[in-house]
Length: 329
Image (cartoon, rainbow, N blue to C red; front, side, top):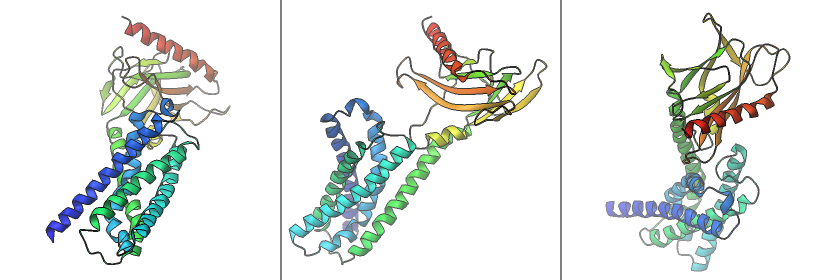
């Protein structure tokens, strides 16, 4: 009995691997024969594809023995029709779910239009079809299954939801872990208003001082800050949450060293008091390139006065000019 269980576990594990490999191969083939190759970063697309299909692949491996009990003593044509039908239904449902997550969070594949959906469904369909066929071929000769197909169909979505929740929890934990150590305090000149740009991972920058576990960053009059400190931006559906949860404090400081904490502002109005609007994290260039730049963007409001925020483009030009001069030294 123990040998049979071990064999079944081995077959289930191999079916998951077959599913994942099939996804990657089909994606590569689609890119090879379509015009999407230039629009898609294959290095990012494959991990995102694997993460999305993995809960389904594991769920199929766990529930296949019950689902396939529908096919006990059935003719081969009925076996083929059943496996194709259930694979198509699963692929369409999961394809729509994966597509909506890509569309809503604007992450992952880098192409956010309806042309992505058919490709995603095709990839999932072939992968799921191969996994079910593999399990039917090998499990059917290893066990005498009782007829519990309906139970298997009920357990499949339960398993899928459960494994998806687990993967999201793990991803959330990995993504949020750096927040335990990435705490910043910005000291801004009392009369400063306008754009602030903070560049990370810069050899030309300075190391921010640490005090009570927080990085203390002094904002110069031109608003341009170059730091050697490392910052890695996550590339998954939690990136927006990650940016919003960064622990950042802002203080206005006068010549005597007196500090006033500035509030975060969503937008400017005539009644707006002093405050800081966090406008996000941006990139210039491709990760891994020598010219790649990762920087944060802030805008400081000072009482009821405001500069034209379009001036920020000039500030960024000056920033990149400074970086270029530094790199050419």
